[in-house]
Image (cartoon, rainbow, N blue to C red; front, side, top):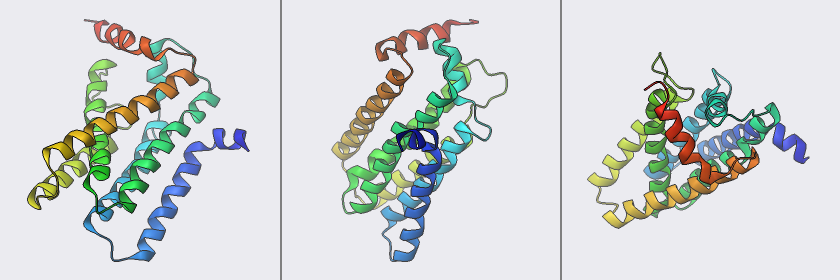
Length: 203
């Protein structure tokens, strides 16, 4: 069973997320926050497939940067911590839509993804301005901007809410990232050095 989950982690995540969308559609009478969550769920599904399959290649870029060969099994298994993070970042705000911090955590992930994929063009010295996952990452960023505007217009979040939302997102993302790096036999503490080395190439 574990081997099956590792191999089909992306597909399992997609099925679970699609089921959430279907159940939410059947429920009806959703709050605005819950509708935003559904948009994020749809975009996260597309983003994972754009990064990993169509066109894919994001992990191959990471592999070349850290100079470690990542096997197909490791690539597929790497979707497990990512899927857990994304499910947590969507199920929790959907269920706790009366609280603003959970949806802010999700929104800041969208902002982070949008920025990271643009930064990736420079980091990986792309001749064509695209990194796998860029299109859907920018859609996540736009969705987050729309959410921030909605929250601001309705006075639904304070400065502290935004601060806690950003901090929780960063902490959770770092934990997920550390799990990923450990799974491919790399020290998480070495990541900043590798990023610096990659930026200095061809300069």
